[in-house]
Length: 408
Ligand SMILES: Cc1cc2nc3c(=O)[nH]c(=O)nc-3n(C[C@H](O)[C@H](O)[C@H](O)COP(=O)(O)OP(=O)(O)OC[C@H]3O[C@@H](n4cnc5c(N)ncnc54)[C@H](O)[C@@H]3O)c2cc1C
Figure 1 (cartoon, protein in one colour):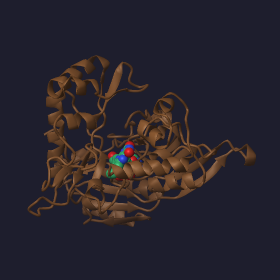
Figure 2 (spheres, helix red, strand yellow):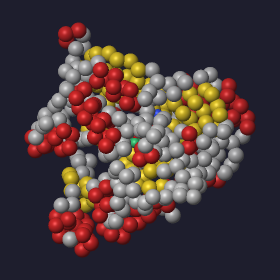
Figure 3 (cartoon, rainbow, N blue to C red):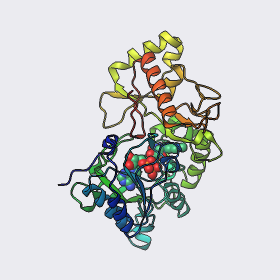
Figure 4 (cartoon, helix red, strand yellow):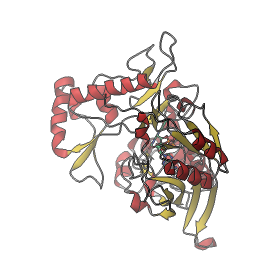
């Protein structure tokens, strides 16, 4: 068994040996840069320069590079589209391994008229939304609600990406992993990943690298059942009917509506729109014991009045969380006194003007100083502390933090 070095260890600032960088340069399919910053690799456009950035054009190169770094005890961070990463201004001497292998294959299960489902297999570096588009164009159903999510295919099982009432776990068939402890490459079943709300046992652990993913989709061109009120409404479906049943719509129509809804919230990347210089939803919706709900509600009532308290959204937390419920992080943030755009014009990091739950990099402060990761971290701490003080609920960040922590 091999111990996987943790990139959090990089704070000890051991420099990466120059001979290791030289050996990385020798790996076929790998290209190495020592002056690329995380600001260039992440959608938040923040974070300093690591010891090296290694771009891997093939999955074989990914395995060879990660194996070499693990053997040398150099902290390695796997990077896809950088859309779920908060990286420190001084990330320390870790090596970023960017997966660029992006081959995609489509096939069907069964034969001809007997086909029962469609299969899409993608290497980890494939752009997620291009796969969704491809599946919809081919007349397959299952991925449409996950339209417009930035990043790579390989990252989708890592936090079981989800949106608009759907999660990737609903259609995930198998995942090819490079296990960093055993050195084995194998296809595993989604069951072994403990997928749940924005979680898998790959997230925060660095235990394995996803090399490829396989999805099983429907061939009738229809979406997964619509479970999200706003989406159902925009598709002309009665919300109550959608919540209760198995209402499906053509996947291309669902994709168009999802993209429109996401654009309205600044949740589709657009270099011109600073509201999208983010990591998406910054905090997960808090899951609390059912017994705690009345305490939170009474704190809301104290602060905002009984009517508002009665309208507090409370959802079932889902199968893996018996006796627990999910609250809306965005709702709590706004009620705690953090409106969209907080803390206002001139601040280098702000809440999105379109969506309370996105923390955004505005590029610079009023005096022209470029925004830093520290600015964003300060905003995250401010919001988290405000919600905890107001309602006794501790928000958990959704992105992966590198070289920096939300705890002061
Ligand atoms: C505007 C915006 C909107 C978003 N909307 C959503 C949304 O609706 N739903 C949602 O769930 N997420 C959303 N996100 C978050 C993000 O897009 C997803 O989590 C996405 O899957 C991250 O993919 P990535 O390739 O960018 O991962 P990265 O940010 O590069 O990496 C994230 C984490 O996954 C690990 N990782 C990445 N690739 C691999 C791999 N191949 N093997 C092992 N580990 C890997 C990294 O080491 C890191 O720990 C949004 C982000 C933004 C910026």
